[in-house]
Image (cartoon, rainbow, N blue to C red):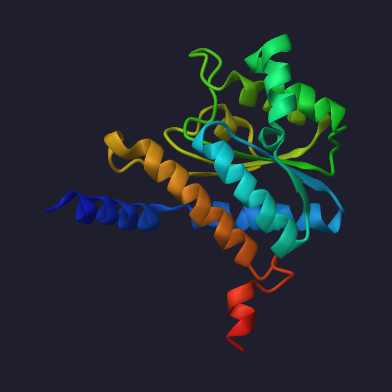
Length: 199
C-alpha cells in the first residue's frame, strides 16, 4: 500500500471513531453563546493558530458570532512574548478583552496543553482564567486531550490511529469539526458563496 492510501485509510478510521455526541454538545454550547450575544476566542499555536484564523472568518461570516484569535495580531503577540513571556500571552489578551461568562474559549491544539511537561502553558493559563471567570470552554485536540480535555465543557479528542501522524491528523480534523459546526442547522445563519450560486 502506498503512503497516500495509508494516510487516507487512517482518516477514514478516525471518522468512524469520532465522538459525535461531543460534537453535538459543542453545537448546543455555541448556539447558547450566539443567543447570549457572547463572543468566541479561538486559541491555538503553530498550525492550530492558522486554523484559528480560518475559523474566526467562518464563525463571523457564516454563523454570525463575534469571534477573535489573539494570534491574528502579530504585533501584540510578539510584544507580549518579548516583554512578559510566552506562557502569559493569551491570558493577558483575554483580560484586556474583558472575557465574560457569556463568552467562550475554543481551543485547537494537538496536545491540549500540559504544565508538567511545559507544553503550551499559554493555553493552560488561559483555560484556568476562563474557568475562573465562568466562560464556556470547548476544544478539538489530539493525543489524550491534555488540560483542555480535563476542563472543557465539551471536547473532541481526535482518535490516535497512528502515533507517527498525530499532528497532521489532529490539525486536519480541527478543520473537519469546525466546518461541520458552521454548517450545522443549529448554527448556520448565512449561505456560503458557491452553494448560493448553485440555486
